[in-house]
Length: 379
Image (tube, rainbow, N blue to C red; front, side, top):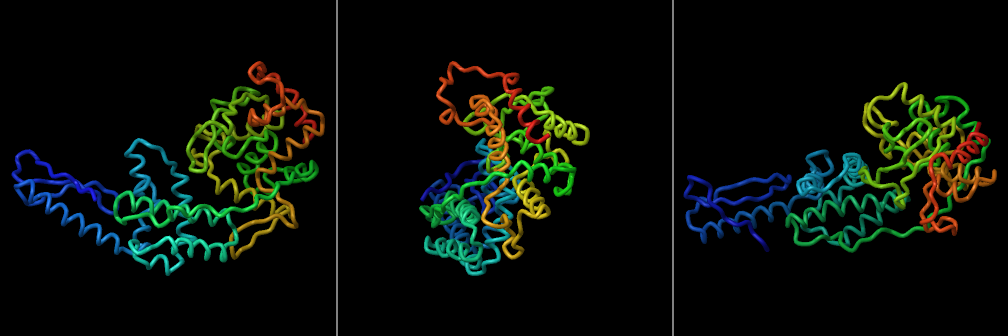
């Protein structure tokens, strides 16, 4: 086990050493010794006692410092190392921790040093029984895994009991599309079923452009050039900016209906993001809740208050991504050029038509016919 090295401070006869406390704060402490050998012994004694105290800390107490921006030990360490981690991701993990882990007494009252892999598996099994949402369970176990991995990295515990505990596999159900009539009725008036003008315009833009959630929420005003949208970046699951999926940066011509939706935001919003709240970009929680609440109001979905989850009425699978499925389906049925449609929606080059992509050059003006088809379908 590695221990900090002793060092001298100017004008002091004693050896000092640096260490990290359980809150992630970097501190220095005097050994009270003037010889290096005795200083090293004092450092070993202190660090062993510190680690023993931490490993006896209850998991709930240890985890309580995590995912609070910007003091979270995990986030602070990554930032100090020059890496990036998004505040929305940290806050989302905190909500999962408070909602699904802290209420479970047996895991929170167990010393972190005594948690074993079997405990993590038992926690996962309990969450599956209680929530029934496999995707959420995987996210919660991922949050617990980050805490245990950070404790291992800091040598607060000897090994990570969550190591090797992977995600539960589940069959992803095929998404369905809305009908043209459903979308016309859903967006018949503003804000209507969406309750807020911002939410209405956000999802109106989604159904008219087919843009992915991360692309739409990361859209900035400098990428709106008259009738042209320059799609250059997207938010990932952690809230960090990245290239669009499949590196599908593209310029598209906006349908007139989409120009109107973005124009309404230009008249009311402030900040660099087209869709924002008080200047901050919208997170996935806003995206998810506003969408499902609108569908509940419209009569296509219902909410389970016990589990705080939404589902479509009947057997339909219509998550927010179905807006993208819908516009793609509707314009292709209207005879859209497949190559232009593929480019417009930013499909992976591996799924594009057989025309050699290296020799195919598409400009925003070329996609105008796709935009006109969208106006024809939904206008």
